[in-house]
Length: 383
Picture 1 (cartoon, rainbow, N blue to C red):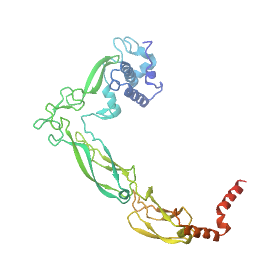
Picture 2: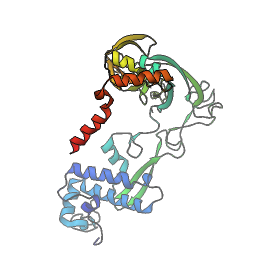
Picture 3: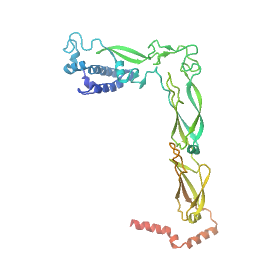
Picture 4: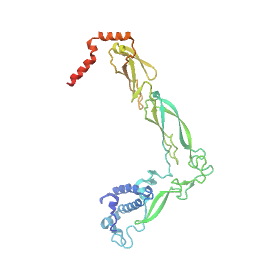
């Protein structure tokens, strides 16, 4: 026993470790090295046996006390700790499944992340994308969608067995979905629990499978659903339809359907969050003298707005409450932000050019040299 690894070192804990610390350390390492998680890995199996042996000793108060006093010799035949002819183990039936149950509760499967396969299982969630118009995202809409998904077989009603027959209890595992294998270790007889290979953990076998679903209990079909697109939804956001996903198994609930929205761009409006943005061209005369213009709304209506005299290029106007409603609270509505861009004519007659030149001269030096004066101010600033 001189070359045998210290039990505390095996579990990666100190000698003062509490019961809960021991359990936590063992649980973490047992998951990592369990044979089911490392099929065909002899080193992992050997490591798992070492861990099991160490935990079996240190989790028992009497055995731990003897080990702390005598080390591994406490369990040698004839040693002071064990007495002649036997150690502390004797013929213990060491069932790893019992230890796992103490961690996770009866029926738990620490390597599968859930309960045994022959229990109720929730159906899988489905995901799809839907393209909608810009207006539908802002104002909401009712849409019809079709998707390919599994559904309960109407012939066998989900049993997987041909009509007139029924699934039978697996003879290999007696319906538990698990089989146990016993092997001799230093601790005595150790029992490991694995998924039944005959029924693959279902606990039932089907002798005569249903023809349409081939024994699965499910068939592929087309679902047609009516969905309500909420006001204010944005690209990338999803609608969840509870119970519209894959059917559950063994009485488990159906999964959900998640529909992610893709919004088509609009010809003149853009969107950022709950605000709408629009660019409107105006003439130089409108900007200089002011004017009343019509601002188009997303719903097709128009609103009048008075441009102030002397409006500069790129000026913005905020129309409160004319934007997008919040998807969480439709009473909170964003703004419509209008940018006024001065339209510069590109084709002028000779007469128009002469009139503009005359206007330019009539404005005087302050206006004509406005650009030059601006550059002079910049130069002075940097000096």
